[in-house]
Image (cartoon, rainbow, N blue to C red):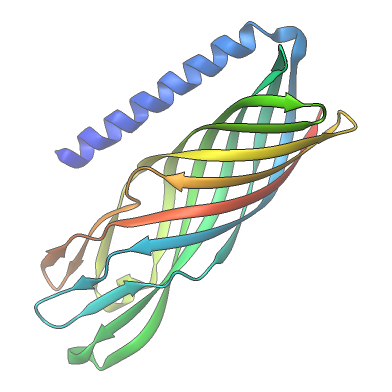
Length: 217
């Protein structure tokens, strides 16, 4: 019940953000541009260690993993400001260390991968061709693949999350948009994990550094 309520809240926020972006772009048609965007993202994960009564221990490695993203974007300029909504398909990954003495598993590293749909809305100020902005980002999880399943563990991922992005950008020859972003997560990526019938909280959160290049039509 709580999981469904969380999904509804996040989806409601996404719909509000989409509506606001539509209003802004509709009021600035003369300065509206569309384009394609793609690049790489480096993700870092942080989660509390999971320890069960059977001495199973799962800890998240905070090493950087590289993923990719691509999609469409729009950019509106008005009164020295800019508004930049995007719709991106992206992939990220993470690694966890497993210790399970009963199964003779000692310091094994397992990988997890995620495919998601991101909808960032960045608003900020222009400084000539340079830009600086901040905004929310809504994420819908499309697919998760975890090697933990091979051990009989079942991790529960949230289908939608909510976060924020800090962005610095540069428009080049009025045709290209180069952006560097930092993304933080305001909600959990994972809601829990089942290990041999034991339910344990697994508060997994991610942060990302994103580099992308956009091309306007």
